[in-house]
Length: 221
Image (cartoon, rainbow, N blue to C red; front, side, top):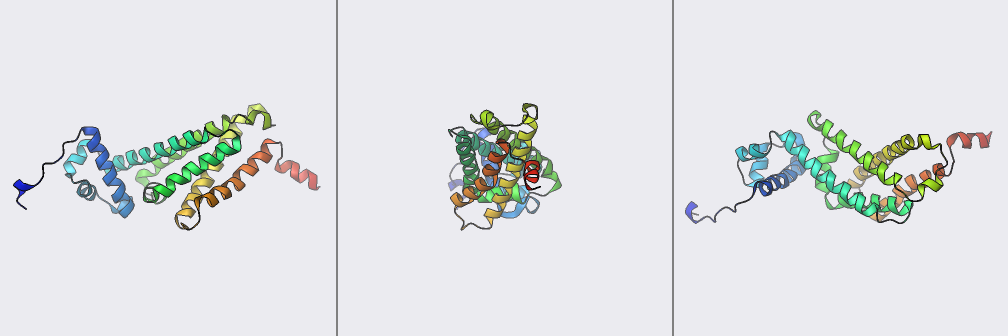
């Protein structure tokens, strides 16, 4: 084709171009991983020059970090919107877990590229920041449970610490389940949510009601 016959390139605003580069990066990171891809590959996928990428991002690390943040923000938005619609603590947790796993189901490549296979030292800090943010979001949702105050029999002065610890356990367990589910796609999402609820909610309910390992040990003596 004569270059003069090529269709004119669509003009984009700077934010639109940035989003286009991020979308292309998501494809390449999923295909090749962080270590295995280059800005040249991302530029080729986006149909732009490497120089244009540098107008928006200083490095591959910055590009990955922004993509990570974009996906994390979507997860948190879904989590908050779904969890806050629950009338009880159990419903809120179930809806939140389901919202998280729904994202994984709809964005398996992004999940693998950004959260599972990202072990490079360049991006460990960014991932740790996302995980800390996730714990904060989960702790806030747990704290806003309308029934929690009447169920929780612990000393209120310990409440924030226990809440953060339980949020950390829940975040870590659910993320580990998502990694496992990536390799077991035949398992329905509803079944995965049920197993998470059995593991997390039943234990939280017993603790909130005053059960403890210390109490269990005393009862068997």
